Image 1 (cartoon, rainbow, N blue to C red):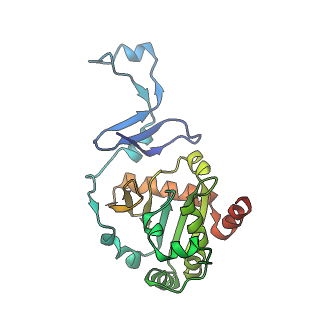
Image 2 (cartoon, rainbow, N blue to C red):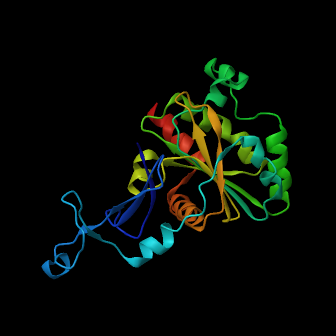
Image 3 (cartoon, rainbow, N blue to C red):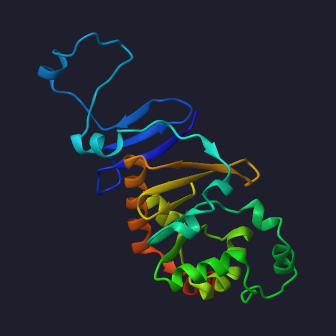
Length: 246
């Protein structure tokens, strides 16, 4: 079973931290081991396999409360949110590639050496233009490996069309993301209220999304957004950096 980072109250990225154990309703707690003899003798019904850690109350009150676990839904189930959100639609992209990109005609043209920076409007970009024209914000942070993968270089090459439509797309190296303890999964965050977390198979195909308004999930997403956005580099500037390395 894998662990999914939930949140931490540590400024230095060490401990204390909470993780969710995927496939269960259990949480793994990371903290300083309790060693005070006066405390240890007061503990009851202790099994040899058990240990005890100290964590601040704020860690549990921020991240431990959970609503009923969301069920996976088709991505199409959140299509209306891209029109109906009121203020911000924010995306974290963490994968090294996406099957939807590799299966697109634009991918073949890019591999053939064509410039894909200036693409004609499509339904997505038309909606972005409408929403940003109304004063709303579409924003993304994309993680990029060093060196960048083909999938990441494709997104850097194609980003200008989305930026021209009104999206603010920025990039962050994976090393920086790991230092910032960003989540290792993709999600959309709408109006700091609704989180849609992606599920992918091993071939990078989207299986669906888990949609929730659970305060703990939303808070974790908001904190990830704030940290990522502070350090991320605008896509045009970042693309020049990657091109100079290739």
